[in-house]
Image 1 (cartoon, rainbow, N blue to C red):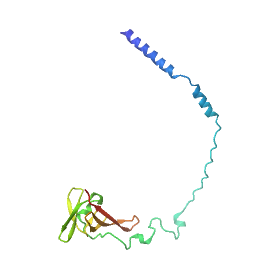
Image 2 (cartoon, one colour):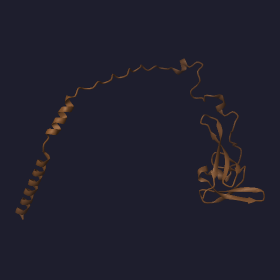
Image 3 (cartoon, rainbow, N blue to C red):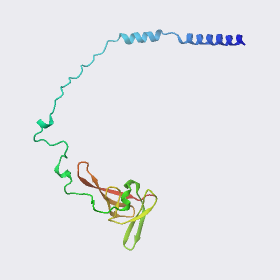
Image 4 (cartoon, helix red, strand yellow):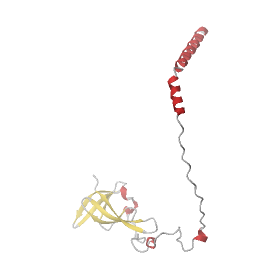
Length: 173
């Protein structure tokens, strides 16, 4: 038994030695290539760009007559006039859903009124008419056709005012 283990270790040692000897083959070609690369002349390194000194700006002393960086650029963007959401209006149920989660599933004509049928993300279908509100951006329905519901949203312009943006919900299959 002990002889068998010794024989296995000897065989393993011989195979490992043979494998390592095979890895140390002819390196002449590699040595020639490395020497050729080392013999090339060195390249020119571009000089570093000149670093300009930092100019200090003391806001309080130097800012006489300059616009405050904490106020909007233009007076019209402060939100005076133009489109504004009606904060006194009671919210409708469909305004609790983001517009992209609502889908038009059809229309319904009753008398001379065309209703749009809107499916919410919870699977319920609601009837809407022009003048109703949809979505979370004060989207007021302006027109209902066979293929889509058109509305106008009032969104923030990011600098204190509001703008109107056209949107639509198309009929889904």
